[in-house]
Image: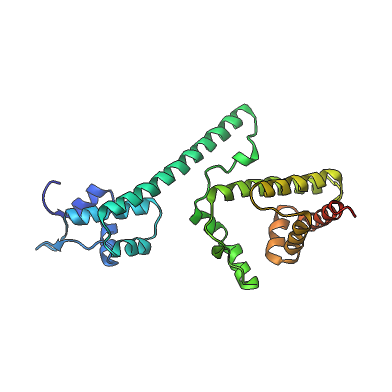
Length: 255
């Protein structure tokens, strides 16, 4: 550092944030200057600059300012903060590397006129926070109407959710195409689509027999929120899916 204390302008230039940002941090009590010069300038010493570094790391991780303030309020050891931030950034690095690979695979497939497997379309997407945000509207609906809170069901595994999303996209896309092409809901081909979907669920720890799946589809049909989700993909899909699931359950029971 050029001298013991830096002005707000110098601290901003050194850290890569704006003077306005430092003023805001001071206003909300997140980063209080070491002192004020006789000319009225905010002054920052090494301790403040180290705290600013910690704030910037948390901001890189998309932490909101109020949460950062809470985390730093207890004045934890600097090494402990840096260690935690390192682990968080490494996790993000891993996810970004997966995203880059997905982009490269998608671009390579597009150049060759080929389509990559649907289960690879979403590799690398979604942190736990992103998934909670994506599911927030559905969760509010479930809490308001059924007293069921998705956030109380344990932590979200982003990779597992990505796989589930890819499978759901594949399955619903195939069912929508079956409907558009005029296939009967009880056709063998449609039953095969459902059977493969249930096999995927069982292989990923979400075992559900044909009867349970049919009950889920009936719930989707009777619930405004979930019915609208299906109908937005293909008109009639909610009804077609329910009829197909019921036909599959009846055939699977041997009746």
